[in-house]
Image (cartoon, rainbow, N blue to C red; front, side, top):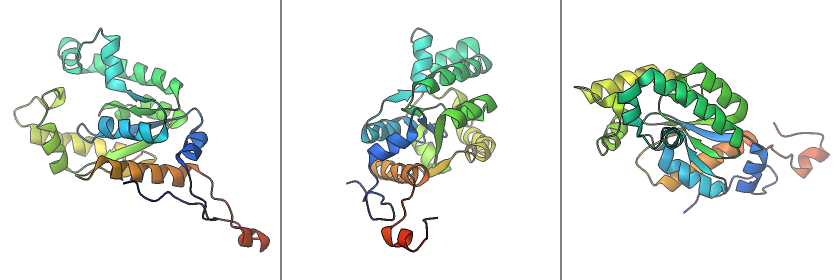
Length: 211
């Protein structure tokens, strides 16, 4: 069940349509670690907002004749992958409004952060170590974790990336709750950030305005 809709100060519910209107041509860009839920939550968020969902990693695979991300890493190396990722995300950001899920390392690139800042609203899905490990163990397609100690590698990546992820416009805690609850929280945060607060009639008559 969805959470109650956010309201402006007059008590009028803020609709998803109002959020999309406020977005204009911008994208809602999901950032965070592998396993944070960017794709699964992103799809549900796109359905809620009635805008397209795009997965940057999928688009990279399409550009490489359906090579998988692990195959691209092993064949060409991480530097090649990151350069292509930057170009793909810059192109995708021209296609808003949309929900765009990015790979775990994408937001680390200053050029990508700049492009996201100019053409999107960034949302960090922040997850704790234990949550990420439980989710990541279910899959074998994480090239950066193919090490002797995946847990230690994950901790090192978190230590490196979390201070940069924290630059995102919005932070939402990704945790073991129904995905719709996380979607509710993202929608609420977008409403708070994007939809102007409307002064209540009595405040206007008294010469006051909403903060």
